[in-house]
Length: 124
Image 1 (tube, helix red, strand yellow):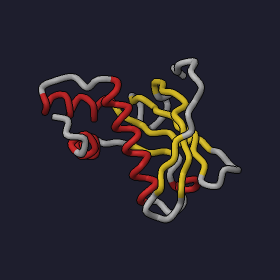
Image 2 (image 1 turned 180 degrees about the horizontal axis):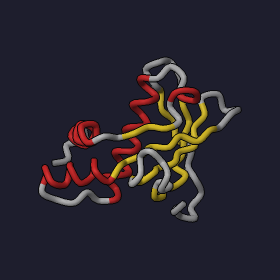
Image 3 (image 1 turned 90 degrees about the vertical axis):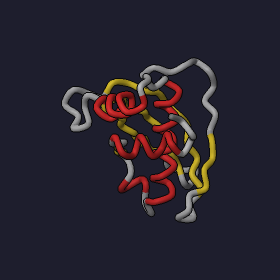
C-alpha cells in the first residue's frame, strides 16, 4: 500500500441513513490480478460507525472506467481526481447502504458512475 508517513486524520461523515461514520484513507494499490475488478486501482479506507469496530472498505476504480472518462474528456485524470472519485463513492455507500459493514466492503466505480462523481465536482 502506498501511503505517506503522516499521522492519519480520522474524518467524519454523517450518512443519510442516520449513521455517523468515521473513516481514514489507508492507501491505494493495484487490485490483485485475480480480483474480479482487475485491472483496477484499489483505494482502501478504514471505517467505523460505532467507534468500536473498524473495518476496511475497498473502492475499485477499473482501468477501463478511467480510459472511458479520459477518452470522452480529452485529458488524463490526475491521481487527486481518482482519489476524489473513490472518496465520493465511499460517501455514496454511507448514504445509500443501511449496513456498510455487511454490504459495502467492496465498492466499484464503473464508467458511468465515474463521470457522474467527477461531474458533481465540476470536473470536465
